Structure formats: structure tokens, C-alpha cells
Image (tube, rainbow, N blue to C red):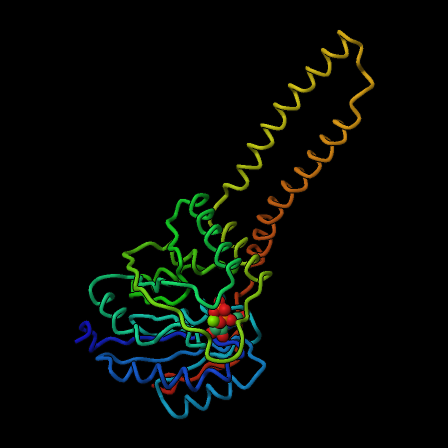
Length: 322
Ligand code: UDP
Ligand code: MG
């Protein structure tokens, strides 16, 4: 018997970007698990501007199964925003976020639900291994999260993706996060609440290909860092102080040498080195400040984070189009 959830609704949120080849198998495996749950469920697909047949497939699944609802975003906004949009639209008391490519096993849902029923608010899938990822990606990811943990003062769950189940308090907290430049994993850590890990082995993607590349990962990493820590700015100030002190000491040395030995002409190589070093440092400092400035610029525009082209339809038949 899974936790007491007869009167509750479990929402399954699935971000979808060009996953037409995966959706049927995904739906079959997921619905086989949902059938066995004691609580009602809804499956909300968020079509994130797919250019293949994903939306038609989702519409077909909706005709077959009234638990299936969907929102179709006006273009591709990226997975972070797609998840944010889904959180705004789900209606459940508990929420599971799961990828459409079956890398996350739906069979874990009963165990996660049991933890939610047991009083946890954020039950996260902890990857026992990261098969299918390059050694470089694994190494970079490990170092990045270690770095993020040192720089921000929130505990970051390692080896964790977006395969997570949330209780109602966590859902309410996530809905209050209105920033556009979002790193959902950081927000999941930020909200706090009682967290629990559930271990799983990620499968290889059943079809299609990963939408991530190093450029997108770097973008996500920078957003994560700049949204959760201002320490890089402080490091720039500290480095500026250290350079100024070192420059002053060197200035005294040069002055004394010139005054005592009259050695005022030499030193072209060291001059060049210092000039290039300081020049490089100034560019780096400006770059770091620029990253924060870019985020402030984007946030002050206060644009809606996404637009919905079509929303259809929960069990009461409600359809909203805008
Ligand atoms: N996804 C999305 N929008 C995007 C990129 C990806 O909604 O711009 C979805 C994608 O359809 C999948 C999930 O996010 O359901 C994970 O994507 P992917 O498998 O490409 O990432 P990986 O598992 O390689 O990190
Ligand atoms: Mg995947």
C-alpha cells in the first residue's frame, strides 16, 4: 500500500522538445505505473516549441486518455522555463517532474510518493551512475557543483537531475519564484524543506538525441552561479586590492632601484608582462560584472517568462487559449 493519497491528485510534468519518437513508449510505461497508484493523476505535457510531431502525438494521447493535458508554448524557451510554465499550470497536490526520453524510470514513482506521504517535501532522484555521459561532462559537472556549493551558501544536491517529486509546500514555494533567468536545480535547493534522495540508475535515451551541448551547459552553469552567489564580485574586489598592494610594493622597489643605482631604463619585458597581466585581469573583472549586469538588464524588463499558444484540457474540459 502506497501512502494515503486517495483524495489527492498527483501531477506528472513532462517537458517536451522534439520527442515524437519517445512519447508513445513513454506514455505506455508511465500509465502502467499510474494505474497501480491509489491516487488520481494528471499528465501535463509542456510542448516547448517542438518542430517535429510531438504536439500532434500529445493531442492524440489526450484524446485517448482524459488524464493527459498539455500546454503548447509559443516557441522553444528551454527546459528550465518549460518546467516553470508547467509548475504554474499543474493542479496536483504533489508534482513529479520527469523527462520524456525514459532516462528517468517511472517505476520509481510509488517509492517517491511514499516518501511524500511520509512527510518529505522534495524527493529527488539521485543518479547512482551517469552512464552514457562523457567523462569530461561528468568531471566538469562534479567540479561545477562543488564550486557552486562553496560560493553559495545553499546546500546543492549532487548527482541529481530534474527527476524529482514535490509536495504541496514545495510547489507553492516554487510558484513564488518569478525570475526569468532561472536555474531550476538551484531553485529546488534554494526553497529548502525536507528533502530525501531516492537512488536510481539512469537509462539511455530510448530514441532521438540529447538537446544539450557544452554551450547550453555553460550558459546554465553561469546562470546558476550568478543567480545564487555574489561572491564572484567580491573575489574581483579582493583580487583588485591584492593587485593594487602588489603594484604599490613593486612601485617602491622600482623607485628605490632608480634612486640608488640610477637603473631607470631597463625592465621592458617585466613592464610588458605586468601590462598584459593587468589588462587581462581588468577584462575578466569587467566580464564578471557584465554577467551580473546582463541578468539585471533582463530582469528589469519584466517580460513574461513564456507565452502559451494553447492549453488543453483538464478533466473538467477547461480550455484556455491565448
Ligand atoms: N527539453 C525541453 N526543452 C529544451 C530541451 C529539452 O523541454 O529546450 C526536454 C526534453 O524534451 C526532455 C528533457 O527536457 O524531455 C531532457 O532533455 P534531454 O534528454 O535533451 O537532456 P539530457 O537528458 O541529455 O540532459
Ligand atoms: Mg535525456
